[in-house]
Image 1 (cartoon, rainbow, N blue to C red):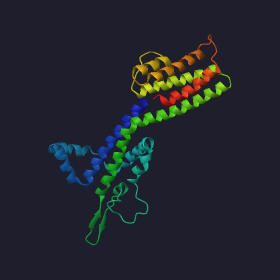
Image 2: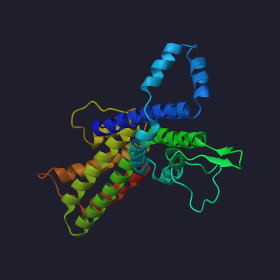
Image 3: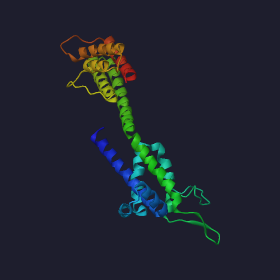
Image 4: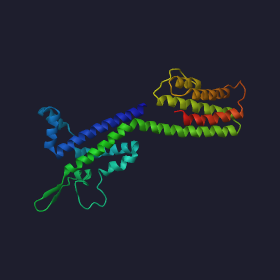
Length: 272
């Protein structure tokens, strides 16, 4: 993981911790007796520790909006398909006619909304109904953290695949125009970068400084990632690429470059 991505992950961890503190503050505000009982059971009935913890809790109604904005931005970036779910736990449902436990949202809680019935003021729904809504928001944020590493890898793989496809197309166009060495050089770079990416996917680190296609291919074969036929095929492509790189040697033929272009496409699709 790059330093930039590592910093993002750390900030997300801090955001989750802030959310957990907000969740505790919400429970303390809504169901203080139940919250105290659960806390004391978990920590051996230490009253002093409980009082100290309460003093450190944030004010949910003052600090939630900032947390919500940050969390919403993270969900939009990491798990965009869950953004509408995340928002739905805050926003009041459209067309809501009656307020029930099921459709009481975090916005209602922030506004201090409480619903009673009849002259006896029988309680229908109050602030504690928002606790499950916030819990689900926090769970979505935690899911975003769990999927962060794979999401970043997926994004990188997609962008790299698109770039490689474009470069191979460019190599094919150069080959048709007669620029055989240039086409071969491009294919060589694409194969080399792709094989290094395969090493990264498998958690392999090649120690040789400035390794070429043959070096990386051998390393993947020795590591059990590629088969012998795949290794031989890549070595054949590396031999053609070497012809293109040596200006004092013979000129590559059009057939060889066509094989290299087609072979590069095959490597991208079959070696992973």
